[in-house]
Amino acid sequence: MNMSRQFVLPAALLALAGLAQAQVRVKEPWVRATVAQQQATGAFMQLHSPKATRLVGVSTPLTPVAEVHEMAMQGDVMRMRQVAGMELPAGKTVELKPGGYHLMLMNLKGQVKEGQTVPLTLTFEGADGQRETVQVQAPVRALTTAASGHGGHGSAGGSTPAAPAHKH
Image 1 (cartoon, rainbow, N blue to C red):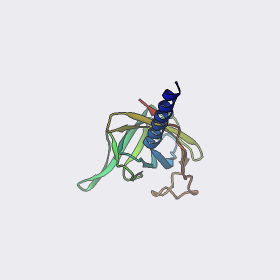
Image 2 (tube, rainbow, N blue to C red):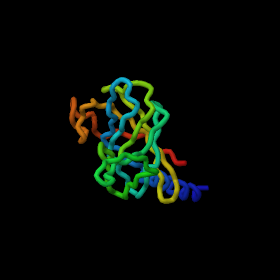
Image 3 (cartoon, rainbow, N blue to C red):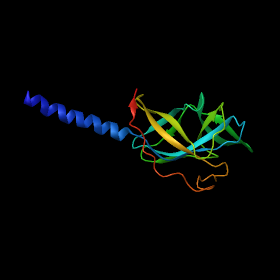
């Protein structure tokens, strides 16, 4: 019996270490405020993963439609389109920002106002097909917030602790 405990504890510690390593870190999340009757807004943040993974989904109780989008030049025109996923290379920080990759929150039921917090659930998928979710609380910043995310009435950023990942 004592010998089996010697093997169970290290195995449990290794499993926990693997879970901690898989966790995607989210820094400086924010959502742009809207005006009355506006039907959509964007969410922005920095994502860092210790291992290669993909952002494959987003959901929020704020609205029934939330998607990963990309802004890209097509000829002489900047176009926005939904993408099936966004690569996060191992050890590199990827920024979701105005004019690039971002999250679109659509079919809004009401105005999103500066000072509110929007809960987001990000879904990531590893090369092995395993999925994990990360809970984020994104503060709403003024409509006038600069593309860098640090305009308006100051940054509401900083590192946001994410809830534990859930494997699927």
